Length: 301
Ligand SMILES: C[S@@+](CC[C@H](N)C(=O)[O-])C[C@H]1O[C@@H](n2cnc3c(N)ncnc32)[C@H](O)[C@@H]1O
Image (cartoon, rainbow, N blue to C red; front, side):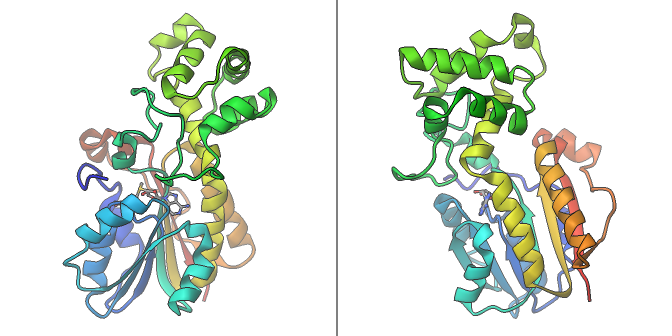
């Protein structure tokens, strides 16, 4: 993974939200290239501890380099943050001061060749957050070629909010009778042929929503994030903060819902009722930030 290009979103807002203090123990559960983590380390100082977690082993390598001169104690862990309880136990950490979850994928990952993430390149149909999936890892190729038409349609509709989900699922199942759909290029062709011509002239590429949906399903992104939020809140000290950045409405809905449940259970108070969104200036400079939303909560004392 290259160590360029990913611009952390809602940067100052997120660092402020975490209420960082010298000596704090902080979890960055979605380390990526370490953009937010560098600032966290600077705020917690040499007596502070950063626990940085990422499912993608190549992200850990980039972050290690970017954090090499950061003076805080660093534990960089290649794991799913949904396993936060066991990760903290293995490090002998009982309670944390704050946790950041910057959900989704980094622009570095999307730009990486060979992962099947982009409909702009013809590649094997993988879409796994693990860059080296083994034969037991669920891939987009397995979903598209082996799952029932109705399940594929449900995924594309539920995780992609794609209005032509049923048509696309039907076209996928017809095509796979002829040949396996094993590349992004073949999938893009099937989607393009299944949707009306007018859809090709819309604001986004006709494959955008289907690719998003498959990526969410392959990596169980919503389930992982939900577990991470619950375990993160459990691990927080009273008064500790959780800050969560989501990238699309489906993710934000899950975050909002999970925080609401935790608030109703008396575990947290919401620090902001409405999510914080990027300024016009940030969106101009980094269009990828346009649908980002930051939600913040505090563990009850
Ligand atoms: C948007 S990027 C984070 C960028 C980071 N905040 C920065 O400033 O560089 C999201 C990262 O989270 C990782 N990720 C997504 N879901 C994860 C999960 N359930 N467990 C661990 N890492 C995850 C991805 O691999 C990706 O590197």
